[in-house]
Length: 155
Ligand SMILES: Nc1nc2c(c(=O)[nH]1)N[C@H]1C(S)=C(S)[C@@H](COP(=O)(O)O)O[C@H]1N2
Ligand SMILES: [Mo]
Image (cartoon, rainbow, N blue to C red; front, side, top):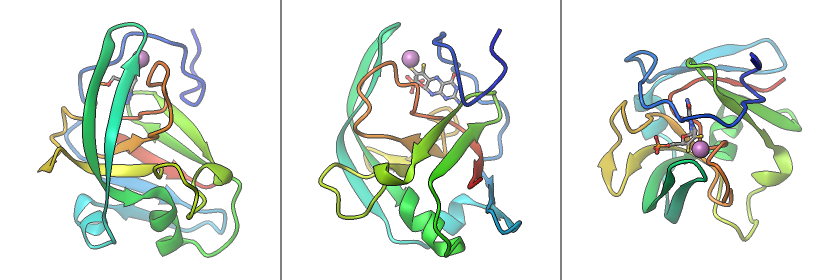
């Protein structure tokens, strides 16, 4: 069995939140750590991204959804001024994904990679995945749509 959360094998998606706490830890290459809460995210500039689908080959597609929250580049920019190449986003249930800097460049035409706190205009529940990584341009298996983020690491 593959134990690296950043290389998840395809599997039945977990419907059970690993715990009740939607806050997550942010770590940067300069050794600083922060605990980021949903209230912290709510104070940052918000974006809405419509037409998002959770596409799984195993159990069908859901959506379209409108996800709202903070772009990944906005969050990182609030806490870290240095350059970076990739970010690791990990959930406490052992699931995760990497996002490359070139995927979150502001000004690109595609919808932004974001940390969602709202779905279809209402606050997400923990069961919905709060806080959830949304990679709008991912169309297969939903392996990057990480629910219940517990850690964001800039290595
Ligand atoms: N933390 C976490 N996020 C996850 C998963 C998981 O098992 N754990 N499964 C992924 C997969 S394979 C799918 S298809 C979707 C399912 O999302 P849904 O539960 O909102 O339908 O979540 C993705 N994000
Ligand atoms: Mo999936």
